[in-house]
Length: 159
Image (tube, rainbow, N blue to C red; front, side, top):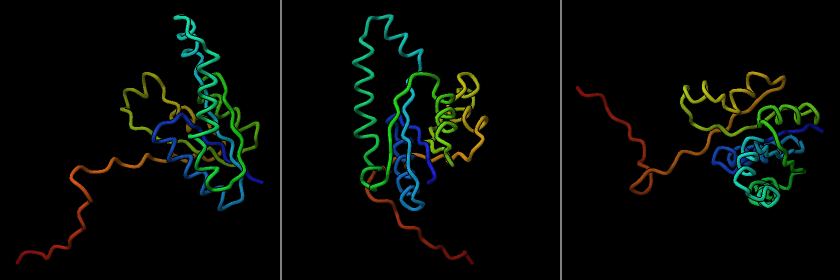
């Protein structure tokens, strides 16, 4: 049985990736490993201001087991969840290797190139290090203001 690893964090992009992974797993009979990697730097920052990390991690686990994986449950596919600590890109690649995954699915976010160069986005790191196919799933575009989208019209060339 093939395995799909999907990175989740609650963003619109990763919600789209979860929906895509559910459809692909249903289509191919694959199982899904849904992963949320909490960066250690965030945990250290919370500890520094005396925030209870265990409580925060429990909340993330609840989101991962609940709302974030709802598309997988709805599709009726086999899946497991993993909440891990560490650099998201490194951990996603590590889990994909450990699980012998056939592909990795990630939600894409719109960042500037400058942001990615400075902080090295997760997606950028993953696609440059992955030994398996990586599927980038865009977040759905926001609805346009003013109601339903206009129908496409065909214009006749002017004479």
